[in-house]
Image (tube, rainbow, N blue to C red; front, side, top):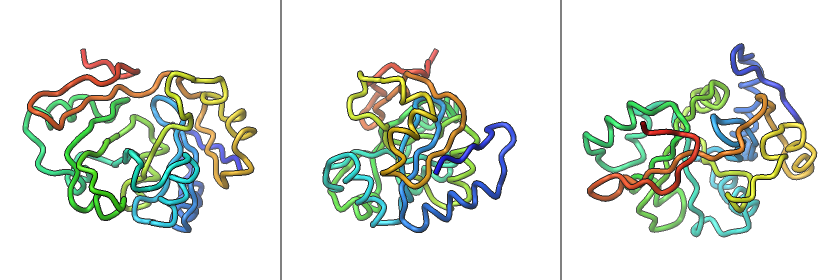
Length: 204
């Protein structure tokens, strides 16, 4: 099912329909402020396992990120945020950045793993932020493609995404053309931030 949602004039009924699918354990494809992504309800174990299977891995080996609605929600899933890191996040989010932070014990339980790190996103995209807001907790998220260097045309065109994944994914959101470049990744788990990948987001 392809659902068209206008990022500048969101129909709340459509958001409610998407959230209902998420709570039923479905995985969805949606726009962000970089590439189109696929994800599920963080609190739904069946959905987490389904997402891991879609990506061809076991849940305990996954390195999925989460999308939060704001910085206050981020604090529920990470350990103490140093002031410089918080300031940098406040300056750049919402935006096309992924921050790698030290995960809380809550994350360890949800992913059946001893993972100590977690990618955090707050995209500058009204559609996905409204979904997270209505869901009441973060979305687990990952890119559609397995190789970040292999960005084919269908990763930015919602109609081509639909043609490619319609038989596997119940809900695909058309939020307009995506970008071909992924988010900028910054590792903030150490003493100083480290740029892991330069993407759409520019720290300058």
